[in-house]
Length: 238
Image (cartoon, rainbow, N blue to C red; front, side, top):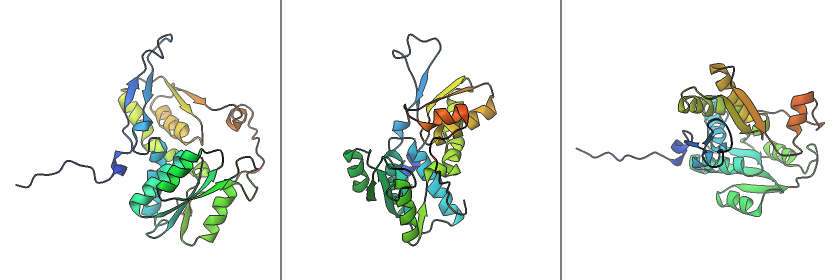
C-alpha cells in the first residue's frame, strides 16, 4: 500500500484560516476580552494574500485572465508582494506601479519575486501622468493581454473578505464578537468583514482606524471627498 504524503499542493493553499490570539498584557487595563487575528500567518505575511488569490482566481474562472497574460497593479508594497507571489506560482508576468513612499527594501523584495516595478512619485495628484494610478492605466493600455487588478476600485477586494475573513472570525469567536476594529486602507478588509459580521448580528460595532491625513474620516462624516479625481475601474467581465 502506497503511503500518502500529507502536504499542500502549493503555498497558496495556506492563505486564510489565520489564528485568533488573545491579547493579555497589552489589553490588561481595558475591560473585556480582546483578540488579534494574525494575518501575518498568511504566506505573504499580510491579509493582501486573500485579495490577490481571490481576485486572480475569479479572473481565471471568468476567462478574463488567460495563460500568458500579464497582471498589473498599483501598490505601496503589501498587495504588490501578494500579487507577485500568486503570479509567479501561477505563471503570469507581473507589473507593478509602486509609490515612491515605499521603502527600498519593499521595492527590492517585489523585484526579487519576479515583478517588473515602476517607481512613481508619491506626492502628485491622481490625474498626473506620473502618478502610479496613471502609470498602471497606461501600462494596461500598452501591454497586450494584460489585466489591471486595481484593488482600490475592485469590488472583489471586499468580496474576498466577505467570503473568508468574516466567516473565519465569526466561527473562531463562536458568534460572540461584539466589536471589530480594523485598519481602513483601501477599505476592502473592513468593508467585507463587517458586511458578513453585520449580517450575522447587526449589533456588532465596526471601528475603522486610519492614519492622520486620511480622506476616509472626512468622507465618512461629511460625504465630501478631498480628491477631485477618482478613477473607478474594475476587471472587465467580473
